[in-house]
Length: 347
Ligand SMILES: Nc1ncnc2c1ncn2[C@@H]1O[C@H](COP(=O)(O)OP(=O)(O)OP(=O)(O)O)[C@@H](O)[C@H]1O
Image 1 (cartoon, rainbow, N blue to C red):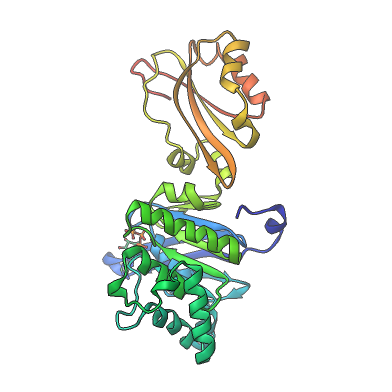
Image 2 (cartoon, rainbow, N blue to C red):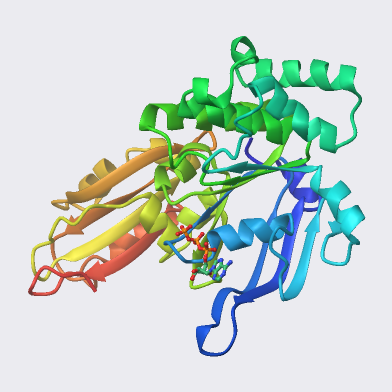
């Protein structure tokens, strides 16, 4: 659910502050996380993206201390995890569900048995375990398969069991490490819809790792881009796409690579909220008698509102188009101006 102003006033559910983690030592040392700080607001779906080896898994595993940071602090639901005793940490982890890429189910147990296991570990008595496991399997759409073993389930069904297990002990936070990357596109869509449903129905905060921008666009409210163990950008998606030069925005809304004519002006306009519905380009062409060419455009729905970017080519130099650009900016639009060089490149 998109964070409302009321939610923004609440303290974050996850706060990672100045976390660093190095594996190995000497010449073999690998710094997986380098002074990482980020916050996840209550009820948000927060995506962590970045290339392979950027530190995404290490980061998400520090949020439930499966990976202990060398330095820094991790606060989940108001509790600083790094200073807890082993037994207190085990209790705290029961409120942090985790979903894994390869499901990590016990083959010897049925779907119901796998979900009940999480409740056994939480000390729930037998009757409540059965009732709760049935309820939660119904919620993930797998009630009819409660008695099936993992070997009798499809990948998507296995992941639903994994999600049910993660939800069994009524966590406040759900962590997902590439939950959909072993699934086909259609199953991926249905699992993402399930995340969204859980997020909305249970008010659960979700932090997920993905390398797929479509996942971020599809369900995330906020995201962080990791590079070489560092957070290079983080924020709400609508806010990010309104940030000039945002790498995440460029990855979320790729504008294609149409080549402008040499000596022209190239402008990138970011639309969000109401501006996405206005006939901005037609008005620009009319008011400034400009022969506007659209080099690329993408409009998407993010968190229930329209957002997108458009790359336009205008005849003449940036100086000659200054009035047109000012006009766009006066309308509250975010405009970046480039000039096309002789080779059709943009600078
Ligand atoms: N247990 C470990 N021992 C040694 N090095 C590790 C360990 N775990 C991670 N690393 C290293 O830390 C860096 C970050 O790894 P991590 O798995 O967090 O990246 P990632 O962004 O999740 O990558 P991928 O998308 O490929 O899963 C990599 O260089 C990796 O080789």
